Amino acid sequence: MRSQIQLAVFLTALPLLAADTMPPDADQRLAREIYKEMVESKSGFTTGATTPIANAVAARLSAEGFADADIFIGGARPDKANLVVRYHGTGQRKPILLLAHTDVVEAKREDWSTDPFEFIEKDGYFYGRGTADDKAQAAVWVANLIRYKREGFRPDRDLIVALTADEEGGGPANGVEWLLKNKRELIDADFCFNEGGRGEMLDGKRIANDIGLAEKTYTDFRFEVRNKGGHSSRPVADNAIYHLAGALYRLSSFSFPLQLNDVTRLYFQQVSKIEKGEMAADLAKISEGSEEAMRRIAAVSPGMNSMLRTTCVATQLEGGHAPNALPQLAAANINCRILPQDSLENVIKTLKGVVADEQVQITVKQDEGAAPASPLRPDVMKAFTRVTDTMWPGVITVPTMATGASDGRYLREAGIPTYGVQGFFGDRDDVRAHGRDERMLVRSFYEGQTFLYELVKTLSANPVQ
Image (cartoon, rainbow, N blue to C red; front, top):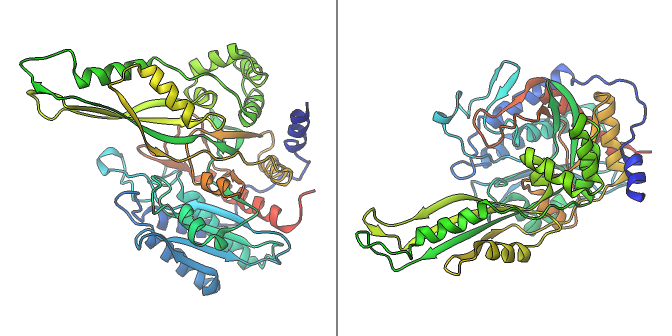
């Protein structure tokens, strides 16, 4: 009952006058210019660099009157620089951290219908690698910061924009992890806004604005079988590839148990309001704990299935050393996304039980570690809901748990609550981040610019009543 009362308070918008959803023309042009510059900078995780973006943004901020002392450029590697800039307020409250990453997933020209590193506007969309993940938010944070300065806005807390490296693959050059270890004072904040929330459209209609409160844990396992091998003309049953194949087949037939947590329970309660018929009824039942409804929804929706259980899937294979020899090695990468309430130890134990073959060795290759969910802060939730309702009347706020991973994990672990907020709307069944022909609706980009401008201003002017 208590959580239902809290949800009603947080997600009930106060009546406000309808807002203009588009920024002023000059601010649109500025954001587009920065966006284009970022998208056309080749900052692929494995082959590119983020330093040129950091330097270009720093030069732009300096030209706008930001002091050199308030602009930091640095990182774990010369080519993987992060940029942190501070916009000073009165200091009455702790800062807000506005985070975005400037590295992107690699993209090959032959895979795309356009050049992935050319910023193209056509058919109402901006195309290019990073247009959705995550250079739209990076460009908007910078453009809005400049707008605040030009307008003479004096927040009651500092605003910190951090554009960071190597979110897409983590590792030693990850910008957020490096800043927390080496320059925490630059990014220490009351809370952070990051990627991880999105606006959902269905049949061209805006239906929900998601706010990310938690995310699953990213873990890679290695399944490995080693064997003495031999001549292929004398096959034996003890074949490394067959052992691995059997293990993968058993994994493909297995599903982890269905579970809810506080965030996903609220998520299903809210999305039940925007669906119809049996789907809506089942989503409402899920929020009440119905396992039967969970099974039905998990069977028809890969996205919701991922929100209801830990998942593990084979993503890479290797094996054999010659076409005329029995394999001495067969191995696979198993990528798992673990629910916050699950544990690494439980997943390892479960995988060993599923594989049921002592010759298949299971080791952890990479474990990002679990992080706590961010709290349902009344000020953040109320401001998010009010701005959403003002800009898009009838669009509901949906608390959500990301099934992917972001740099928010590092911040949550470090005690900085992090919220996935963007306000960029797109078709919920056409998500192209990490894929070919990544794109962003032109109008959604500019509306997101307004949304983030208003949200940050609301939370840094006066406490939300």
